[in-house]
Length: 96
Image 1 (cartoon, rainbow, N blue to C red):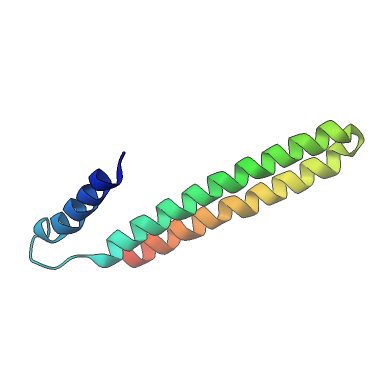
Image 2: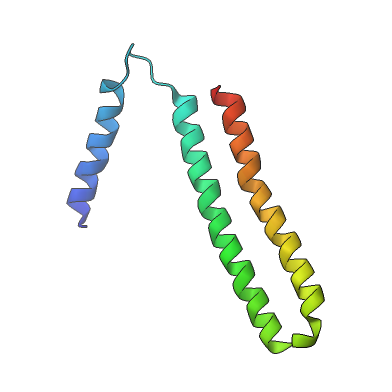
């Protein structure tokens, strides 16, 4: 997509936001919470992919340390996933 088409789409998106409001008020909390959930989920996906790739490489280099690598992987994945869950809880608290 070229730059001109991107700028036109961006301008249409920015101008369409006030037109879609029912009473002239835009619910910025809902919009920003949607963006924050999207960013958190995207970054969690990238982090989980990097963690799994690194653990697979570590297992290939040293199969004898499989138990400790597996434990570190599962702990890391749980902490990474908690970021998305905390963001989801904050979104529900703020929007509802």
